[in-house]
Image (cartoon, rainbow, N blue to C red):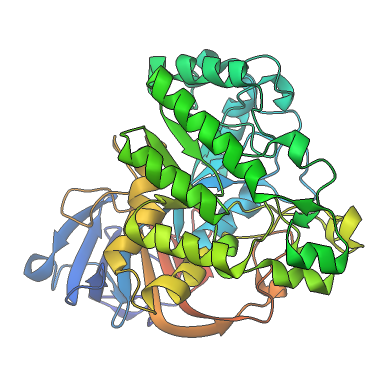
Length: 457
């Protein structure tokens, strides 16, 4: 992608807009289709094709690039408030923009926990102030994530943040009565409960996947059935209540089978897989490097293949990053003392492209569905003036990501925008990279570089 140029004055010195705040994406391929021109103006897609060509605007040379609807993450940890040493809303959303994201859902396990209207509104306003992408706070299901008392679900839903996704992620809502009540409650405002499926009594002290590798390296195991048992229970509860359930970070072949069965019964369940569970396996635990320690743990090669198959056939609806930044002190230690979690926002697109699109298992439209359209729909952010996950069509909000499918790059932790460095892909070559991101027509990334809010308007 070349430097933006003004169609009337020639090359500019950097990522600035034209005289009318308009962008002409020249020669871009929407969803990998035929090359065309796309005009962005006043925050929307103003014209496509011949009507866009020649328009007075800042020209962005998009030859060889694919246009996607801006990516949407249902599963991001921004750490603020409470752990600003690991990540802030500003640093995390800047990383999101560089990864092609125009909206993220910020998980509730902050300090204080996002279990009240006041905390979710604080996170929402921090996102608005940062300006890199839309931040939709996720509300806790239970007070303090303790799993004993419902949080203020209605107050959070009717707050300025308009919360629609509720989760105790990091903890499982293990009490079936509390889970039933939560599913019943969120129906009143078309919310969804996003479950971290982990039976705690089967995973006490667990450090990695329970299997051959855990036995050989001597680390306590986290059995697949601990995830599958909760999913089986919860899809039946969702069916009984008639409510929406979203299963976070599905990691086992058995879980994929359960979700496929539930969908065949018409149960309102959706599910996500993370990039790391799609690509990596428990064999990495042989290194004893806690950068590979995550919850749920990396599973077997057979599980990873089942996830890829489930993503391709639609059983798994979305890719959620589970972006989980940690300080060096929390990861640069022995395995048992290391924190669970991995970075994901800046590498998610490339991982999915490398595994699924470059191999022919999914189309560009499929990638847009699992990384933008479906998460926006599940999170109920697919309508309104700034709607996410919308088609690249005239009149739609200009939330866009331009990606280079031919780019090959090696992940360097030091180059990431996150405050943390705990990426499991360090030194790994990936195919496909985000070149530009537009949030309602305003570039947040151009030529692969972040554009601070206010630098282009």
